[in-house]
Length: 64
Image 1: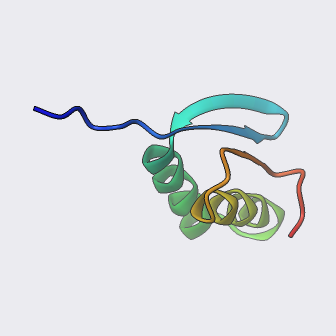
Image 2 (image 1 turned 90 degrees about the vertical axis):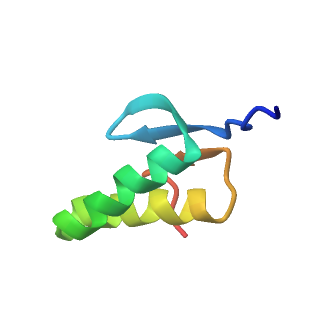
Image 3 (image 1 turned 135 degrees about the horizontal axis):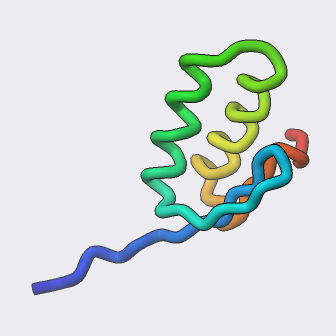
């Protein structure tokens, strides 16, 4: 039986860095996009789309 490959990513948000499974991180930041507004939402959007486009490291400090 084949093992499921875990796609680990590193996310830095509000100065804190955490290692996540890509799907879990994307789910978390997508929920943040839906629940927040203003600058906080913008941070989550930046991180979500970095992960969606395949980044292994994502940060709220990098602008598109």
